[in-house]
Each structure stands twice: as structure tokens, then as C-alpha cells.
Length: 394
Image (cartoon, rainbow, N blue to C red; front, top):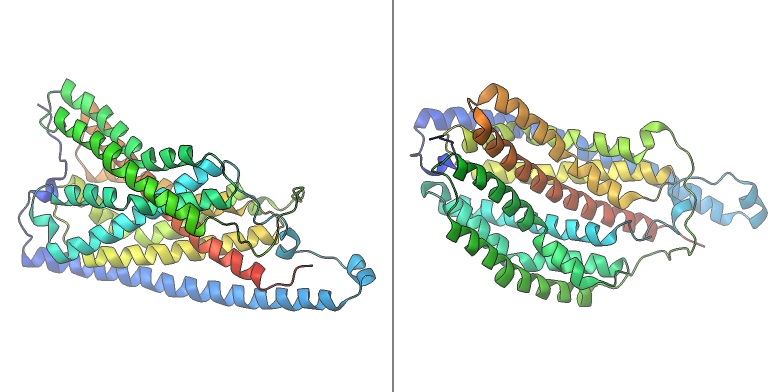
């Protein structure tokens, strides 16, 4: 039979004093590094944006004082020029709002599970972490429906029931699809880690009888409470043509570069999390994980705000997908790191162990990417709304 280390950190006894001390020192070092990066980034973002935005506001207010002839002769440029298009609905609003809703739910699940792990010592019992995560995910389904449903309503979406189904089943379908595929390989190899048929049925019942109804409740609340498109600027009937810009201002380049700094703030912690999953080590420092989650969110929001400011300044108003994907690209770097970890840190081999490792790493990376994308979009959305509220529009 093929042996594979699945959630082996639930089985292990508590580590000894020296192991705790070593892990603690390395964790403190990584947290300190990440914290210094956060201070640097927040300072840089606030300094750049406050100075440049102050200059922008001064220039725009000067233009307001000119008469029409001078304004026509003047060379207008910058983010104010796209005020009639910046709140235009994103392309594919149904998928976009479902991703944002799912990301908000993943963030709330991560936050609640880490707090419960800090309070309850969930790592001492086998499978308790996984059971807690499934229960919390099902219970927080209204969060998904609320944010996804309200965003879809703001963007003028009509087929809200279809959007609710996509939002409700996006993450469960990805996780269950991967798990069932790996399970077929496990059954073929007669592995002891094959998921019983009864467990599969139970998970499907949770999806249909718990997650879907709670998602429906959240969607109805979201549409009715915060589904009105109360934008600071009205949207023009005809989309403005997007001017040519330098290659590094293209959305594709911004998306590729956006995930580097968020990944840099978490990659040391990724090593400990990967080791707890795949190398028979127990993970117990959930306080550090909470700090890393907060740092990741701050770095992600800072990076996406800067990226969006540069994009809007180049008079490109396609900021919704750009802000989401530039934050979500962190997942690509995490998945690339998982390749390094597989080849240099584990001793796995064979079809079953390889598909098991890369299948579940793909699920983990995708969930992390959707969460980062949603956090980045929410922060950027607040920033965009704020700067267009404070500028006078004719």
C-alpha cells in the first residue's frame, strides 16, 4: 500500500521545549521582517498618495477656476478624466461578484478558525481542525451571499439567482472535485486515506441543505440593504476610448507584478504551514498565523491601491479585474513555491502522492488567491470611491 502524510500533524504529540524555542525564534524573525515591510509600504503608499493626490486636487481646482476657453486649450490628463467610466460595471459581473463574495467568506473562515485554534488548541485532536473549518465555512455562507449579491446588484445584474448558485458552489465544487479525483486514484492504489462514500454524501448534503439556503438569505439581505448603485459620479452612456500607454502600465503587467510583495510577506510562514501538512510536524503557533494574516491583508491592500492609482492615472478605467487579479496573483507565487518544496523538502514519489500533493496545493493556492483578490478589491474600491467623492465633477 502507498502511504501518504495527510493531515499528519493532527496525530502528533505536542513538541518539546527546544522545538518550540527554535520555531519561536524563526517565527519572530519572519514576523519582524514582514512587519518592517508593512511599515515601509504603508509609509510609502501614504506619502506617495497624499503628495500626489494633493497635487492632483490643486491642479483640478485650478482648472475649475479657468474659463471654458482656457480649459479647452489646457492639456487635461490624469484620473479625473475617467470619472464617467470608473464606476462602469466590470466585464463578466456575475463571475466577478461571485469571486468577491467567495473571497470575503474565505477571509471570515480563516479569521474565525485561527481565533478558535488559539483558544481551543484544535491541533491536539485528530481531524478537529478540518471539521471546524467545514462547520465555520457552512455557517459563514451568508457572508458570501451578502457581499456577492450586493456587488452584483450594484453592477446592474438581473440574473441574481444564477449568481447566487455560482457563488454558493464555486469553492465547494473546486474542493470536492479535486478531492473526488484524488479519491479515485487512492481507491485504485488501495490507499488507507481514501475518503469513505458516506463522507462524500454528507459533504454534498451540507452543500445543498446548509450552504445554499444560508447563501440565499445573505444574497437577499445584500440586494436589499446595500444593492443600490450610489456612486459619487454618474456613468457615461458611451465608454471612453482607452489611450495608449507604456508597456509597464498595461493591466497584464500590473497583475503579474502585484503578487510579489504579498508573497514576500508570507513565504516564511508558508514553509511552516507546508511542513505541518506534509512533513509530520505539528503546527501550534496560531498567534503568529493571525499576525501573518493581518500583515498579508495590509500589504495586499497597499499594493493594489498603488497599482490602481497608476492605472487610473494612465486613463485606464478597467480597475476592478486588475485590482482583483493583481492581489490574487499571490496564489501563483505560492503554487510555484510548492513545486520547490515538493522537489527539495519532501520525499514523495509515485502518481498517487504526486497528484495528492499538487491537487491539494492547487486548492489551497486558489483559495488563498480568491481571498487576497477580494481583500485587494474591497480596499481599492473604498480608495476609488474616496478620491472621486473629494473632487469636483462638472
